[in-house]
Structures are given as structure tokens and as C-alpha cells.
Amino acid sequence: MPQLSERFEESEPSAIRLAQQLFDKRARANGNLSAINVAIGDISSPTHPKIMERMHNLGADGSPFRDGVVRYGKTVGEDEARQAYLKLIEASGGDISGLHAQTTNGGTGAMIQMMKGCLNGKPLLGIEPLYANYFDIARDFGKRVITTRRQLQECGKFTTPDMAEIDELMKKHNPGAVLTIPADNPTGQFMPQEVLEEIAKLCVKHDTWLASDEAYRGLHYTDDSISSIWNISEDSVPGISGRRLGIESASKGFNYCGGRSGALVTDNELFHQKSVDNNTAYLCANVTAQYAIGALAHESTEDIRDFQNAQCAHYREIMAMVTDGIRAKMPDAIMSNPDAAIYSVVDFRNFPDFNSEDFVHFCATRGVINIDGEGKTLLAAPMQGFYKERPGEKNPGDDQIRIAHVLSDEEMAFVPELLTKLFEQYKYYALSTRGSVGDAVDTRVSTT
Image: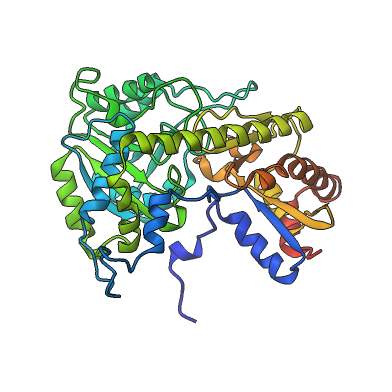
């Protein structure tokens, strides 16, 4: 047979898709089994009603699809959709004067354009644990990622990024951009505006781009104001203008994951023009998704904030239920205290011989708990993929899993019990008898 490329040969499922890939094989052999999937931020709440209204009425008068014709759109994006993304920034208190928006296929498309446009042989500097897809996308495009690392403390809080270390890394490696995620995936940590501005000052000092993944902007549960690169002024960080790149997405704040609608926003006109030129080979972003998200261009900033405030109330309640439940059932586990985004991290470092990827393998391929006569298992994301491997150092992700608080209240209520009981099964099968479930599950997958 023809030979696969080296990149394909080395490919493994992303950390956020691994559990689902494994479980799907098992489910095909056993239909009497269901999974509570908290491995990926696949939100199950209804999307914004104005988005849904347009999705239901693609053929209505005034729709560009009313005649049944679906043409390519502009590479830069449709004007209405671009205005919608600027409206979302404005609703968060950002100054949108002088900003340029390019629509993309999800936040992923914006990530790709950001890396292609500013790294130029230089690395991307990220803050670990870092959303795993940045590592994967960088690998696909031959880009390097260097990192500074936060630690999950016993109290459940992650440490604040070390500015002195970031400064030293910038001196040593001269990164093309520094990446921040103010409402953080995967930790659920909230980065206050003053911390973001300290990083911005380092970007000015070292003459580099400041990139910010703002997919979860507005989803935070503290008394702090919204943190965003678009809330940085020349007064607070002189020289910041013209070096900001924002990754936008409608997936999380507006429950539109499957729409794959995003944008790359910048205050640098030349970067914007060249990004559009470069992206012409990819033609355009999904035009039906752009039409749907374009409805938000006509909403008031107050209405947008009201929708996100309702989202915050919903997630705050679910997170409290799940995190309190896990703490009560597993007091020796370290449970993060999420104050932004939609994720929690559970750290099992106080349990000898635990390995998160082995545990996820076990739950997806063998573990099962009987609840009300139905077999259930739990799908979570192993955290190894959210850290860069460092020779001679233990990967903190070996001890950690990520939980996405994205399912219904009824489904999320199962998580503490499932996690606790599956962990007991894992200890019995993996630790008491075989030592490493990772090898075992590949050859002894149970379908019961």
C-alpha cells in the first residue's frame, strides 16, 4: 500500500476527543450502554434565540438563501457577521474603533491564521496548562510552542503566571507572539485585567504580538470586570496599539458550537489585510453560520450582556453542584475552583500510581456503573495533552483530568458518583491486578 505521511503516522486523537473515539468503538458492540461525555466543551444549552430564528428561516424573505442558492462568501467575511463579532466585543466594554474583523471557521480558523501570520520561524509563548489544540495546530503548521507553567495548589487554585519567568523566556526565545486565555480553558482560572496588562507591557517591551483567545469572554463568576485585550488602553499600556490579535468564537458564550463560527480581530490593519490575502486559498468561512451569527449585529449590547449573565448563573450553579459533590465523595482529590469559562480540573496526585490517560482509557473501554438499571460510564479529558513534555520532568497532566460542565443539570448530577465509582473500579483492575491499564485495555476491551 502507499505510505502514509509521517505526520499521519504519528497522529493520535486530541485529548478532548480521545475518550469519545474509544467509547464509540465499544458502543457499536454494546448498545445498552451510555456515556456522560464531559471530555469536550460541547454545550447542550439552547443557542441564542436570534441565531436560532435565522437557522429556522434560511429561506425567508430577506435571507441571502431565499432562492435556494448558496454561493461562496467574501474571504474577509460577510459585513453583518463581522459587525456581530465587533458588537460582542463592545458588549464586553471594549473599544471597537480601529478594529478589523475577519470571519473564520470557528475559533480554530482564527488560531490557524494567528499562528501563520505572526510566528515567522519564531515560537508561540503560551501559559500551561494550555488548550491542547494549540499544540496540535502548531505541529500541523510546523510551528513551535514554548511555555511557562502554572501549578494547581492543594487549595484548588492555580498559581498566577510568573511575569519574571515570562520576561526571561521572551529574552531567551524571542517569541513571535504571547498567547493568553483570560477566561481560561482548561483551568477555569480567571485572569484579572491587571495581570493581562502586565503581559501586554512585556509584549511592548520585547516588540512582539499579544494574542488572546477570548472564546469564553463574559463567562466568569467573580466580582471582577471582564478581562480582555480590547479593554487595554494606551494610557494603561503605552505602545500596545497595533500589536493585538483576538480569537473570537460564538461556540461558548452563545451556545453555537456546531455552527463553527469564529473571527480573527486585530487593531493592525496590515496584519488584517495580509491575513485575508493569505486565506483566499480557503475561499470563505461557512456562509450559513455567518448569516445566523449576523443576527447579533442587531442586538443591543444590553441584550447581549443579559444573555451572557444568564449563562453565568447557569454555569455557576452546575459547577457548584459538581465540584462540591466530587469534594464530598473524594476528599483526597484536589478539585480546582473554577471562576471562569466552563471547566474544572481534578488532580489525583495524592493517589499512588494514577495515570489520567490510563484512567480515561479504562472508563471509555471497560468501566461501567449500573444506575437505575442502565449501564453508564464517564468520558473526561486526560490533561497530558495540555502540557508540553519536558525531558526529565513529570508531566503534571499525568495526575489530572478536565471536566467540561456542558450537559444538562440531570446529566451533570451523575458526574460525582460516576467519577468516584469508576475510580474504584480502575484501582481494582489497573492497580491491584495489572499495574497499567493502558496496555490492558488495548487487548482486553470489555463490551459489557
